[in-house]
Length: 368
Ligand SMILES: Nc1nc2c(ncn2[C@@H]2O[C@H](COP(=O)(O)OP(=O)(O)O)[C@@H](O)[C@H]2O)c(=O)[nH]1
Ligand SMILES: [Mg+2]
Image (cartoon, rainbow, N blue to C red; front, side, top):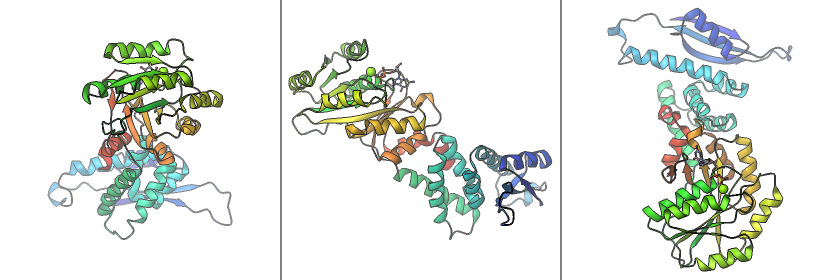
C-alpha cells in the first residue's frame, strides 16, 4: 500500500491536498494533531493526516470484503465524514485525532445538529469504554451501539394527554412559550386527536388577550370540531370557566406568546393560571429557532415549572439534533412533536425510539 503523510494547518486542507494528489479513492488511515514544541509555543497548530491508495486488487484475492464496491463506498463515506468534521472547530479535530474510530458516528451526530459540546461528551464517554477492544471494525460497531444507548439515556418521553385520569376532575393543561412557535396550532391538533381518536371530552380556553384575533383563531378550530371554547382574561374568569368545565376529561389552555425577555408579561400569565385547579404547563419550542434562543426561552418559561416540552416545526429543518441538547439541559420529557402546518394530521406522540429517530434524522440509519 502506498502510504503518505500530509501536514497542514487544518484537516480540511490536508484532505484537499490528498484528494488532489491521490484522487478520491484515497483512504485516510490516521489523523494526528502535532504537539507544539515547548521552545516555540506560538507556532501555528498543525495536523498530520496519513493517507494511502490501495493497489488495484483482483476480485478473487480480496477476501476480507464480499464486494469491492462496499469497500470503496465505505472509504468515500469516511472521506466525506472527515470533510464534514473539518468544517467544525478545533475541538472536533482533536476528537478525531484522539478517537479515530469515532469519525463516522461523530460526523453523523454533528450533521444531525447535535452541538459540538454534547457530541464530544458522548463520543469521549463511548470511546473510553472501547479501550479494551483491539479489532478496529469491532470497535466501530460497539461505538455505534454505545452512542445510540447514550443518546437514548438522555431522552425521556411522556404521553401527558392520555385517558388514565382517575382524579374525577379534568386534566387542565396550559401551553406556554414564545410568540409564533405554534401553541395555538398544536392545541387544535391535540384537541382533535383527543376528541376523535381517544374519545375524550375536551374543552378549550384562551387567555391570550394580547394578539388581535388570537381567541378567534382558536375558536375557529373549536367550531369545526364542535368543541366548547371560551375566553378568560382574568384569574376570576378562569376560575369560573374551569368550574363550568368540571365534566370534561381535558381542558387545554392557550396562552399569549411573549418574548422570553418580557418577564413582566410572562409573570402576568403565571398569576392568571395560579388557581386552585392543578394546571400542568407544557413548554412549546420551535426547532427552527437557534439553540441559544431555545435555551433562553426555556429558562424564561421555567417559572411555570413545565411538566413537558413540545417541539414544533421539525418539518422545517434537517437538524433536529438540537432537541437532544435541549432535553439534556432541561431534563424534561417530550410529550408532543409537531411536524407541519396541517391540522389535525401533523402531530406525533413520540416514544423514545421514535424521538431518537427524529433527533438523529438520516444519522439514525448511519449510526445503526
Ligand atoms: N411548518 C410548520 N409550521 C407550523 C407548525 N406549527 C405551527 N406552525 C405555523 O406557525 C405559525 C404560528 O402558529 P401559531 O399556532 O399561531 O403560534 P402561537 O403564536 O405560538 O400560537 C402558523 O403559521 C402555523 O401554521 C409546524 O409544526 N410546522
Ligand atoms: Mg397563539
